[in-house]
Amino acid sequence: MSLSGRVAFVTGASQGIGRACALRLAKEGAAVAVAARNQEKLNELVAEITAAGGHSAAFALDVADEEQIKSAVKSAIAQFGKIDILINNAGITRDQLVMRMKRADWDVVVQTNLTSAYLLIQQVISSMLKQRWGRIINISSVFGQMGQAGQANYAASKAGLIGLAMAIAREVGSRNITCNAVAPGFIETAMTATLGEEFKQMAVKQIPLGRVGTVDDVAGAVAFLASDDASYITGHVLSVNGGMLMG
Image (tube, rainbow, N blue to C red):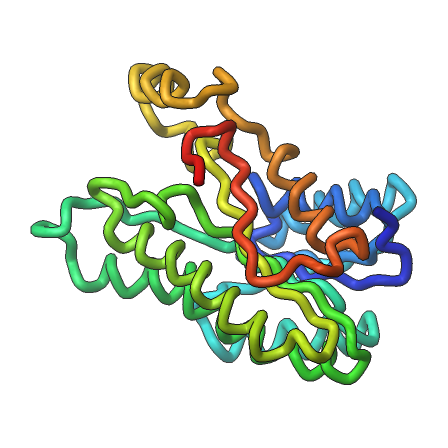
């Protein structure tokens, strides 16, 4: 799955799934622009990729800010010359039952998780069209496929990422650009670390493979979709959930 000569842009790269994706893409040979709000963690990630012989640069970015998105993408293209692969991974939660959910919590989750992906695609697409090659991968969630009580905002945003991937796949497929979604299930990350042990045990009982997933499980799927091995796959949702949801 060599990605040598490719340039990837990964959002939410300072931790969890985004960090694992950046490391895996770099391992496969891609130069990686890593973007997130935490500059210190990004610098540590760049140092790790560089120490392993890779090429990376950090871009401070709050994806809820449209001007920051434009600036970060422009800077990344100026530094690397192009963007071949976009990983829309940045995401947050603001959980609450819908009857108590504040409008601000709905807006910030949709803005961060979904609107940012549309804005980022808009910024990188001309670079991909110019070279007639591109890979866009939206990190969705199993809860965007099956819903989750207390997560109306999060589930809606993650379902939106799936619809967005399918629409973009139809728009740019003729230019050799694919757009897919990866839908992780229960993955061990900082976001899930706050959940109680009882909840985790209950979740594992619903997973046929009998374990919680790792960030590397997701990164492997992302690296595959970013490669030439996946050149005939577009508009697809790749579930990485241990069998938690099938069909």
